[in-house]
Length: 255
Image (tube, rainbow, N blue to C red):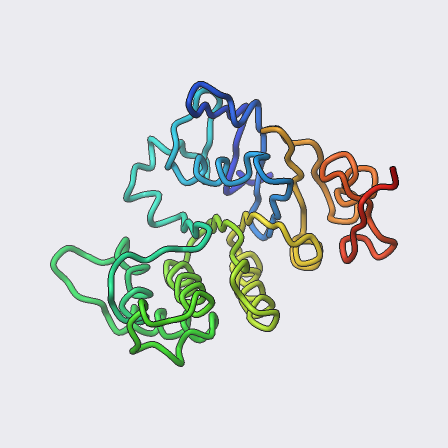
């Protein structure tokens, strides 16, 4: 069996003297689109940040394609892993196209500009995220949803082996939610892997090959979407009852 693209064992993270992750184990293989679900404060974003090397581990290990994050270093991580944070902020007033082009920096030789191949990758990424229509506009003049599509395009331009995405559709309208998730699924079908945080359970069930349910900093269930979103799991984790159509409707439990 081949090495998972992402492998986490016994991961613990401590913030301000409090353990926010405890003994988290999770593998994501090539070809998988895995959804990380659970209530607010479950530790989903913290795990993504840990996998991206942005927060230190109190215990355990995380490996990408068999190498530890320390072994890969910042440059090695940038050539393998794209991290798309919630809200995907951009702090510079530059054109959308320029923002997307930053995804090619890890592959750019020193003192050399972008190649024709790089620009082809950038154009393709913008088309897949439907951000090409405002390529020449400054990102600070775009709506929240338009900026989100630009940042998705930047991640796609990086051609990552592993994409870590925190609520990538939170600011998007229904049409662009579907288009963006199709683009992310394309990373998995192309041989990469995606681990994304979802609060929208219907979307997670529709697009993900597997779900990991977290609660109180631990994994409480994982497997196919139908199994993970079983009514008992949803009630125990979220405190709501699942409708007959699985994730499409929820109701408060009867008192």
